[in-house]
Image 1: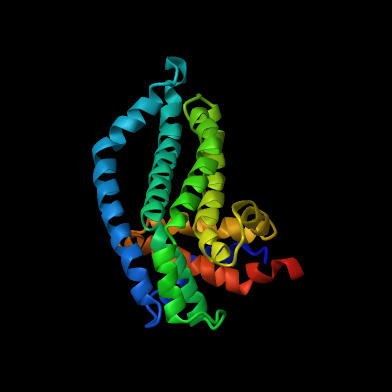
Image 2: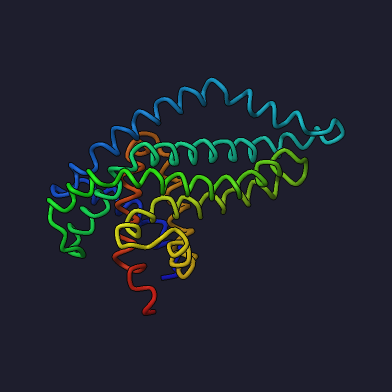
Length: 245
């Protein structure tokens, strides 16, 4: 349960699951929304990336100007991770009503749920409340992310902040996508975090896998459905029985 490499590869397992005949129709709308958000974000990032990087480097004092060659790649990586993280959150928010049903379809395909297709279709119609859950996750993220963003513009401290952001984004991305299978089984947000903490390293591994997947061209169009399917597989394999271990 604590193997980070196992967690890392769950999203790639999820990629194979969304193409199963009994799953792919539930992955359709998350995929379409994912594509639209990716295209818009990439266009915006290309337009603004140099401006953001120059702004962050402008906080560097003149006598530390030599550090910009070291800090530039770190800050660039931080901006990229922030962009892809934002993309994941936005795409999940917009596709929230379809994500729970997709997770349930994956569980049914794995033989871990007795829900029928009719049950899953009913969940599509009744899962508007998933949007409220998304807003709760965004609040959780912002409260903790803003101090890290402030650290990113403080010379010297921003080196450490880049690594803190990498770990934090992995944790929050795991929470983001693991929410759907756990919410389907009645776990509230606090209980979800406690369950993930019981498999902390595997959870972080999954989040890192999502980060890497998000930066792979073409594949990142499938990020949201693949991540939800991967998180559902992780739930079935380990998290659903974590209290017994």
